[in-house]
Length: 333
Length: 303
Image 1 (cartoon, rainbow over the protein chains, first blue to last red):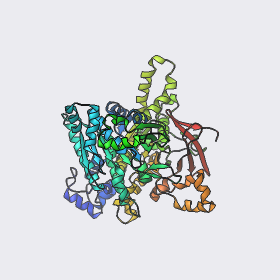
Image 2 (image 1 turned 135 degrees about the vertical axis):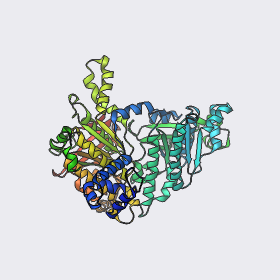
Image 3 (image 1 turned 90 degrees about the vertical axis):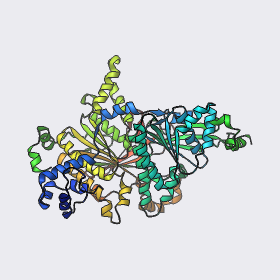
Image 4 (image 1 turned 120 degrees about the horizontal axis):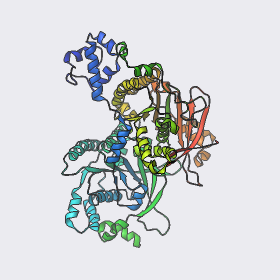
């Protein structure tokens, strides 16, 4: 809803706004939808001026069509694929996270969603030397864990510090701050892209989206759904307009047949372009750190591709530390 | 727009208005029943849950439209309004390439660059618009009216999806349902005008997000234990089938395609999709099944 007011466009004067208000034309939509000729007669305004204002307002507020050929050209030059640093996940994603898209990791507690997110962030910052924005909504992001992963990759402290500096972490714990954070992000991604010395942001992660959205849903109210869609729209716009890869995590529920499915309901299920379901691999004799990743939604690969990976494998060198010590105990037991 | 504007129209505009546009009737013989294809001014709804092949089917139809005549296409222009920010150009191009290569195979040396050029010329017949709110959608539709006037080759308007702003509108519209639905109603009225005055065919997807509780309740007397064990496919059809968008939209629909993701076949692990088409002109429901390959949709014959 865009209210008509003086100065909104050249030619829209105070008198004109007042005259239009007498006919209950208060917003741009009202003006554009009404018949200019009839309106000019009713409000005794100049038809020519009204048509001119209508045309300018339309041009200001509409989204412009882009030719498919131009869009393809732009896409070819701007799309990049960010490797996650995890071979199994890369294979499912057709070689990595695509910029301009939302990818979702769904899984129950302890299936390695946060671990994967942190390692992806580390990989993008260290290997690909790109900036990452990490939005942490459940307190799962741990700087020392990040450093451990880096130490396993390189012993050079300068490189470690450089990589850490490329990851910016935001802590938000409710949906309103998340929205606020995302809106600021859009402004900040724009300014960062403009100043070339820092390099542009290539990946945004939200771990987890369900932690802040799920508590808003339910009952006979529409606000929660609306907020969820607004979060989704912000993420999509960041992904699309600034050509950023977005990675979100989600919890899981069971459907009527007892099958695992991603949480947040039918409406959210349409949002991510690609979805990977993480599960513990519970065949007998398998180490407890073994996880299976199943592709449950994709427009590039056949669905239900399955890969196994070991959470510990990527951190094999730093097993002695207390963070992965727990897992090591499990494996030896 | 008004009489004064019409007096100054160009020959192309006159043709667009008077002569009408090319028919898309034969666009999907597999999907639509006989004589039920989208004629001029038809509005088709693609309804289904996530990952049930709606967008894939849209790509299939769009490619049929933009392909040149000698490759078996219709060579007409398409406008795609992307409200889901979901449009995958790379996927569209890979299907397009697959459809174009068989004709270019004769001389293999120059085939690749020829295909590339052919893809580009096809893509020039497609325009893409991204909309992020229902107000923007409404204003963009108003803006597009001028485009429809001036381009007689433009036959198809695709909106993916028209239900994208449903929850935001419901929540920001206050207490009265009329105000909550105001923007979508205006959009539907405008689409109605397009199809009536310009003969544009409209394809729009709607997400199936409302569970149809009444039908679920109706099926319980048949024995809940059986139903929960192996879900029969006819029940899935009605499970998320409830139309929830405003009445103005429901009224202008002429065809409705309901998409369904079947269980995977245990033999070859191939995901099979079903689409059921009902139209206002023909009786009954036409069902067809298809699966998705790298090269687009393949229909399964003889069902």
